[in-house]
Amino acid sequence: MAKEKTVFTCTECGGTSPRWLGKCPACEAWNTLVETVAESSSGAARNRFAPLAGSAAVAVLADIEAAEVARTPTGIDELDRVLGGGIVEGGVVLIGGDPGIGKSTLLLQALDGLQRAQVPTLYVTGEESGAQVALRSRRLGLDHSQVKVLAEIQLEKILATLASSQPAVAVIDSIQTVYSDQLTSAPGSVAQVRECAAHLTRAAKAGGTTVVLVGHVTKEGALAGPRVLEHMVDTVLYFEGDTHSSFRLVRAIKNRFGAVNEIGVFAMTERGLKGVANPSAIFLSQHSEPVPGSCVLVTLEGTRPMLVEIQALVDSGGPSPRRLSVGLERDRLAMLLAVLHRHAGVACMDQDVFVNAVGGVRISEPAADLAVMLAITSSLRGRALPKGFLAFGEVGLAGEVRPAPRGQERLREAAKLGFSVAVVPRANAPKKGSRELEGLTIHPVERIEEAMEVVRGLA
Image (cartoon, rainbow, N blue to C red):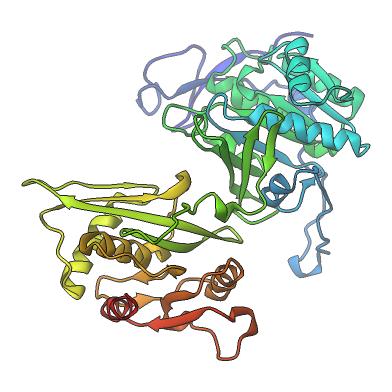
């Protein structure tokens, strides 16, 4: 097969150059030329790959039949939760995370479960040999696994194997190691990653194979390679967690077949990753008695309500007091301290303030505001909040306590876990006589001053 001609295309203006240049000759932008495959006159080279979807006539949206997408469970409940219920035929999933966090381990376990359910699978490894993959499967207790393994990094051979074996699920570990003979650049370059991912996506859509791409991440934790990689795939998953901790989070950042920001919680064991059925137990510290500076929050991760302990430490500071938050936005902490001073009369100008979300979870929703402010006040005054106490709600700059989305689900989760006292926005207060919230005393508030009065009355 004749090798196709390559050119260098500008990512800014789309102009081309026969060779690489530091500056685009068309728009004069620097470092924007990337290697691409030139279109042949006959188009035969491009057309040998199947299109993403068959040609169809123009139709009115209301007349198109919308059928439910069929899903195949992987056998790992937490992974199925993140995927939206299971894998989808022809879907392309991109999963990224730090080295050694457990991406390959989780996918090998998922493939073994699918294979045992009579689902044809293929594991393509570009970073390890077949013997290394077999050794890992032995460590995971998968001694008699029937998963097919291919140690290959050339795109054309991988596509030929997918066409011949026709697996229902294929894992490419990793996309940065795959290269195409059509390009002269090294594996992992922008051009190689983009072209290889595009061809694998076409193959998945044409053949109905679910393709899972493992992606490397940069020092900042973002997926390496062109951002267009995330646009091409159907689902983007991020592996989160400290490698020194046994707990891992898998978060859905994009999902065309399910909810985004859904998370799955796993624990790393000697036999691989195991799903955690009750993740709230991870994020709640076990105190024998209530301690100052601790307040429990009910947060939402996708569709899952979780209880997380917010800890605050207020200590004497110098002329430049520090504000440090772990798992919460630092700029929002500064804003909450200003609201606390202006509307509740709690001054921390000369104090160091440290806030932490227990368990390494990251909380981005503003519903954590009320719990953070109550934890800071508890630490400053040295008074512990009552046992079984929780709070949630967004606090505005005017001191008002705004409702949090899906407040009833948050309260039901708290009541189920045995909490007895809750301070919530008035708009989230349930109707009287709710049997699901028996044993949970709810104090609805409209302003931060009211929340402080309620807490003082409970102490």
